[in-house]
Length: 176
Image (cartoon, rainbow, N blue to C red; front, side):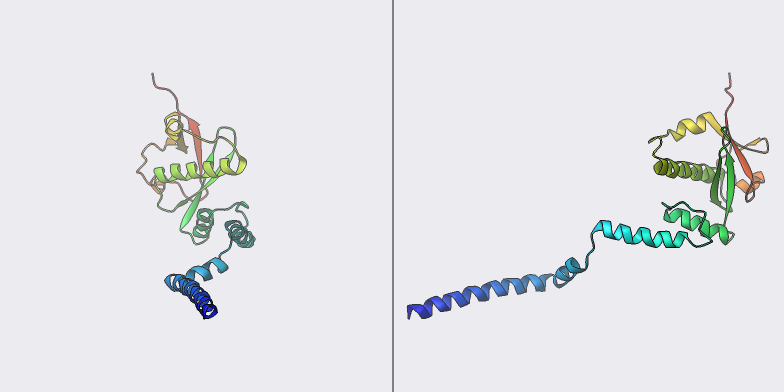
């Protein structure tokens, strides 16, 4: 009889363990499936970058850099549909920055787009980590055909700026 008691006790323990496993699975039935289907972050990034590389090979998007952002893709598409325009910003060193802004953009929108362009450029090239844009806009100004773009709320089209027009980024003259 003692053997029957040991066997019965062993069966009881196995049943309790199975019950605990079943309760765990019932509490979160998708947890086990999610663990099996989940990819590591690095693999997801690789898949995303491969898809992005194929996307950038499209003739419409071929001008974009390899490390393109969604914002840049959307801007390029908006350009093609006539919903945005490119403003060429000429720096003192001769570099031309092609800045994409919406058709009814204000001067402030252009300044924000310049900032974003420069931040992306610095990330890609590993340049300066922090730029004081407050200092930049106090020391420099945007000029279109001799007219200073001083009113941040004014629309670019009100200054006469159209697609592919050139705006100069120049140092402000100090007032005494």
